[in-house]
Length: 207
Image (cartoon, rainbow, N blue to C red; front, side):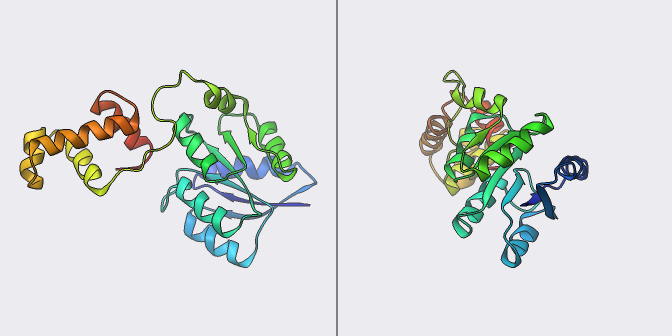
């Protein structure tokens, strides 16, 4: 019997997965959680075989949570279920050591297949994820960039519509320093304008 946890804060998604797993005699759903805190507390008491993990959680990014869980429970199989089809997100969770990545618009059979594949020790990506991950023409960063506290401050002020001169005055630094941080951000995100950076930073919950 394969014991499975679900961590997802969307009731409709939870019910859909519950109904799907209920059709399988070899799978037992032993825990359903809506946030990272409850998941971590449950894992202390009982470790399932597989965790189906959403990325967008109310208290912590599923990307960060996957890293914490992988470090603490190296034998637990983690399958990310997500609406995110960005290569950077996929790459980042794979770097954290997750065992599978399935987009939420995939058919139910892919979730079942993913569970069996990761139990057998294989890495599983749904068809759409595989296409995105292997597409060398995908724009944007390959991994979610690590940004410094100062870069985050500047990025936040840019989203508020402030110019480099205004940012420099507010943060008591030179306009040249602000421009240097902007340039560094564009290099980290592999884009050539701040609008694209704001888009990615918002999607990746860096702001």
